[in-house]
Image (cartoon, rainbow, N blue to C red; front, side):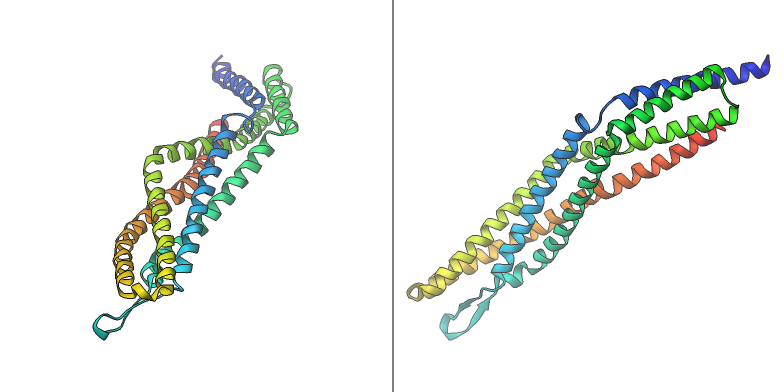
Length: 270
């Protein structure tokens, strides 16, 4: 009586697990909310990547320009590229991080698609039915039943790992949406200012009649851009931290939790 009372709740848990796994196998992930969230995250990442590469290109062009000022016969040469060089180096590293993040999202889309292949979902559904029948009818020994349950739970959680990770990372990205947009807008503004400065430097070099006045005006704008570039560095650091958190640290955390959960389930089913 005691032995039967001990195993019956375990069998009921197995029935419930088999039913839940069967229902989860019937739910497509790639075509639903998770697929749209991944596409949205990829769009955000690629748009920020395009802005970063544009700023990098504009600064690279500015690095080849010089502004020479000779008030009262004293020569002074201003190089916009040198002022923006720290920001440019950071933007290059940031672009690499965004490229890796885009590849990570693309890999998740592939894995999400594989998990949604009808054959894989069919295997999970059949395995769920098999586990249910084995537990109900006692078609094999208890040890084999537990192995089948472990296999079913492992495959189901493995299929759900990417959708759950996507939902967590997408939500984190939504929480940081306002802060990210402000930083991105600052990078766009710096890009426009540096691009405009490059055109003014070129025009100033062509028009020698307004040499001193135009170049003094350019130097004043250059100083303003320097101040804005300092803020852009802070904005870039924030964006680097965000994408590393969302695209690297959170997926690693989810993988760690997945491993921990599998170990706990393995101990529970023993």
